[in-house]
Amino acid sequence: MNNYFTLENGVKIPAIGFGTWQIPEGEVAYNSVLAALKAGYRHLDTAMVYGNEKSVGKALKDSGIKREEVYVTTKLSANIKGYQEALDEFEKSLANLGLEYLDLYLIHNVKPWGIESDGYDYMDANIASWRAFEKLYEEGKIRSIGVSNFLPGHLDILTKNTKIKPMVNQIRVHPEHIPTENIRYCQENGILVEAYSPLATGKILQSKKYADIAAKHGKSAAQILIRWSYQLGLLPLPKSITESRIIENLNIFDFEISSEDMKNIGEIE
Image 1 (cartoon, rainbow, N blue to C red):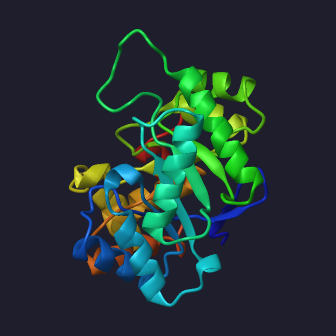
Image 2: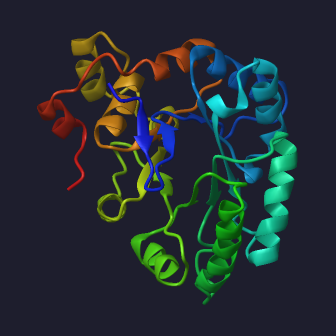
């Protein structure tokens, strides 16, 4: 069983990441990340806007695990756009995490948070940010670069106006929300899709459909949903602050969901 995905630049990325969205800075984030690392996670996903980078970095340091064994992702805040602005924000994240380099840096969103339509598409500003990402990548300060919440049209513009194609697009994916066009575009263009909220923040775990499939394998509904993402070729980023669930969510590599059940859960059409 391959527990890694390989990005287009040859960098290996652990096939499940520990998500830290909505985990508050301080003791909760610190203990959750420490528990995840103890359980065997070697891929941590945070963001400047989550406000917990310092706790993530401290937990990594205190875990005693070698830095090179853990793949660390953070994100440029959606409200920060521009070349120098991106360089400055990167340094802030690096300082928060207490690291000398990042494994993956993402533009968090196409537009600043809270803006749906203001007559400006922000792509010129994203291109400027991306050129800063390219500089940091070429200097070896970031091993991989990508985006989050970008649609195919955004990816097209970015790719045509810059040197390095995004290696990752982190988007919301779970069986009740399957953005088929975006997933297909990424998979056809060598961009790894990371699936955030693979458990729909817990809202769909009580569904009888998933419970019945889980019972066949002696697994939980959460494990089925995470495994479903993985079998689709997506990289799931489950989040929990409960140690038993943190451990459970990683334990999805010893079984396989049948093609029939995969279709029943949900398909990329």
